[in-house]
Length: 234
Image (cartoon, rainbow, N blue to C red; front, top):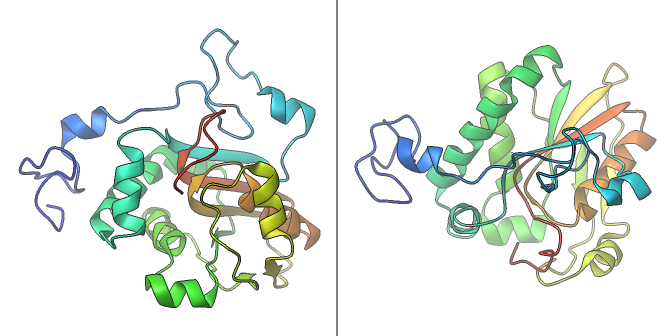
């Protein structure tokens, strides 16, 4: 049984291994046709495997994004409880579902390391934990993958991204990260974050990783914000 013993959404007694009952777990929104590059939800009218217009015009620095759900109810509530209220059972439940989704892919394409998106030390002291690191640890457990929290450092304590559009976010994060030299043998790593909004953060880090010689960079996240909804509370 999960640590809290009840479902985080319907509050019914929950005997499953995660804090979501089977009905609420099955009822979570899904991205049925994601862009194969950035995971943005695409209209069902497009042929399977179609790439979104933005990625066709300018592909992101990372090679693929894996998202559990679109950032619609109840994902904002579940992620907020984890990220801002410290309810670890909420993050663990979502991470377990994402791990199940990624398991077939990672069994075939095993990453050299999972890289959590870092927090600046000042923000880490305030929050008390890095939600991306906690998610990475949960994802790594099933396949015994390596988590490397010290490779990517946040050097500037930038203002919160809340309410910023893509251009403002890019300016906000310029020069915010530093990448240490990875082991020479590493060729494939996965960035882990809770929510991917405009892709600015993961794109910035992915570009730096590739400059350090990493050949393939993927992203794993709990939720992907749909086009036209980039002004969020994340």
